[in-house]
Amino acid sequence: MTDYTSLFMKTLTERGFLYQCTDEAGLDKLASTGKLVGYIGFDCTAPSLHVGSLVQIMMLRHLQKAGGTPIVLLGGGTTKIGDPSMKDKTRPILTNDLIARNKDGIKQVFSKFVDFEGPNAAILADNADWLDALGYIEFLREVGPHFTINRMITMETAKRRIEQELPMTFLEFNYPLLQSYDFVELNRRYGCALQLGGSDQWGNIVTGVDLTRRMEGNECFGFTTPLITTSSGGKMGKTADGAVWLNADPSWGEDYARSPYEYWQFWRNTEDGDVGRFLKLFTDLPLEEIAKLEALEGADINQAKIRLANEATTLLHGAEAAKLAEATATQTFEQGGTAAGLPTTEIAKTDLIGMGILAAAVEAGLAASNGEARRHIKAGALKINDTKVDTHEHEIAASDIVDGVVKLSVGKKKHALLKPI
Picture (cartoon, helix red, strand yellow):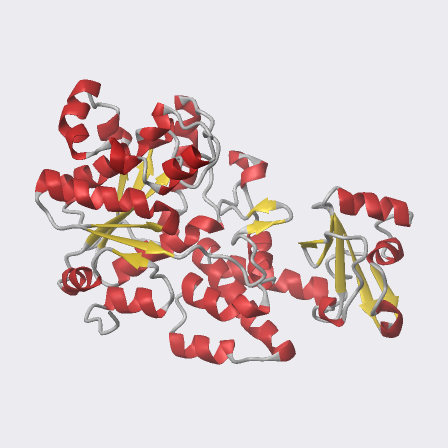
């Protein structure tokens, strides 16, 4: 279906969010009334969400901007089980104290994207409020009759574990029941009729739609997004330094925080082929403006990448943080790094292009020898323009020159620039 009447469905489809939907026409009709209530669940497995969750958060933002009511559901209860979806191993069991701390850590990001005040104010809920109070026998009697083992073992995660002879605990086997019951409770409490999520959640979402219909007699809908990967096939939000976390405050743990500048740099380093798609998914820019930026070619595509970085960083950290990040990047790259205090080595462009990465690291002063540079690569520590170097056979190419310099790094703290002359 492409002839939508609701702003919500038009926006999500035009910007590339739609992968699967249980009933596009029915959802479009409900969304047109302005009374659509939808939710996404976020388990509390870490003290910060990462960029991989951002596509879901943006859908809640679009739902609210279209007049609907978004529900942010924290998985204070389901985290105690652990979502087995698309996982080959059982998730580690977290303590209640750690779950509570993680929950506090991830709460702060949502107010940057949705408004918790106003006529269609977003709702923050926690499934521990009802799951913790469930009696096991009562739950089995109320929910159990609506599920069959036959159906559950055909769900993708269970099916794959069985086919590969991998263990799946009874604890994990219960997860779809609990997630489905979340939909029932949210429908009862808030009139929620839509669950949104990634494509890996399709099976859980469909069972939730079905359970709510069976138990409450209400029509509900499911909507999933495609798996977001980069043009080169990499996983969105993963870098050489790990996940791109949304929290900037290191007090939640330095391994779960990214500064506004690091966040800006992540978007600035977007692959050329992803710029237009990411502008649609992760910014509020109008599609007409995105089309113009997407049409830029050659070196001009950097203008689109900077705009992407500024818009995405503004949404999460604010306009001032985005301006400061861009200014820092300008000092680092366009001014040869001297203003930012980075050591800069000038080298003839004809010598730089085609130079082996080992020699380049030595020339920049980041390694005392080719052997040391090779060890940095083996450890995954040597990077060009913040992208990990995977092989010692890499040669400096013209495309490695960004804004007049090549930035080389070892780890997070040692950086140097090679400036062609």
